[in-house]
Structure formats: structure tokens, C-alpha cells
Image 1 (cartoon, rainbow, N blue to C red):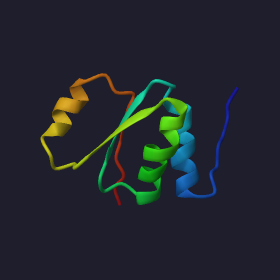
Image 2 (cartoon, rainbow, N blue to C red):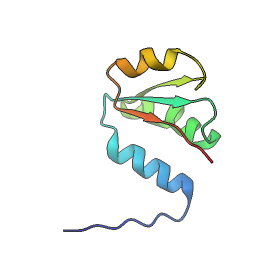
Image 3 (cartoon, rainbow, N blue to C red):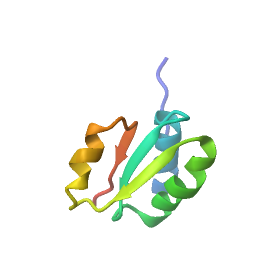
Length: 79
């Protein structure tokens, strides 16, 4: 069965993707320069669902250390 999802907005696309791909107990790494409302969703709504997050500066070397740990997703937005 093929399923197609056509979200009306970028925020809808981002939240749908995060909810579908990150399980309860999962961890997301996102960047300080991602869309602010998406970052707020990651930091305020997802913790209520048992999903933790780390926000990093993408130019920081800490990224390599965090990627080596057990994370469910790395979320970065670009233009």
C-alpha cells in the first residue's frame, strides 16, 4: 500500500516527520539555526511525549561527539 502525505505548511511537514520517525524515549539533536517554531516544538511539546532534545551550534565541534551517541535523529534546516 502506497501512502501520500501532502502537508499544507512546512511546520506541518516538520512536526509530522518528527512524530512519525522519533519514538518515545528517543533523542533529537537540532541546531540553533533551525526554524524557531520547529525548535520550540522540539523543546516544549516532544518532551511531554518522552522525547528528549539537544540544541547545538552547528559550527561547534560538539556535533561530532553527539553524533557518536545514541540519537534517534539529527534535525537541521537549511535554505
